[in-house]
Image (cartoon, rainbow, N blue to C red; front, side, top):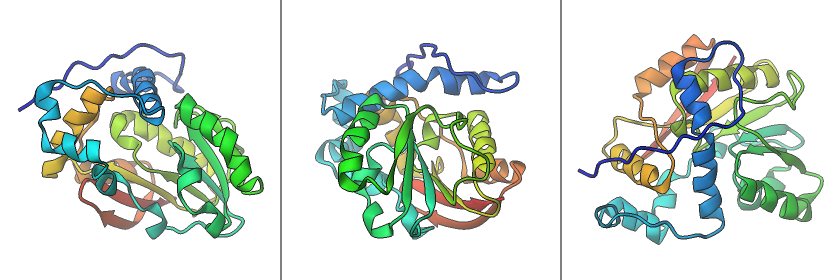
Length: 247
């Protein structure tokens, strides 16, 4: 088995409300490493990996692009954005340029910590559809102070929760609840830590620069209910598991 390296955790000036726990601190400290990992990928820069990691089957799948089909969660199969709905996409990446937002006719509000993704969206989003593209905020998922309470009809977060400890995600749920209209859904995915693929994927991601937190689905279900939310739909994947929740 390949041993995961110790992740870099430089501090960034993000603050959680109240007295943060150690795991909440870990979520904040990991932000620069996560941003760097995705900036590097979006810029098409190469990743230097140890020979034993390169030899892993999952690394070859990642290099060939085959892993994308496994790691991309079809959030629209849980809730399809509707025309003129205001939708918040946390950890949006370059999703507005990839997914059929024009077909959906929904207003896109993005948020991410990747400067490369932000710059790409700001440059190309208005050209694609200036009416639907409402901008992108360069902030982590727990900082939603740019938005009014009960503003959004839908919130989305795919490929995001796995890079943060559950205690940090509790803060995200609290903030998402505040900005969603009552009874409107939040769709997000988690890595199913009980799947065979999960550990090897976590090793690969750690060597790419972003630590992964593996939890059981039962742990996530408990966390969701503790946040006062109801799970109304689930969808299992080869790596990620989708939840649709409401308050």
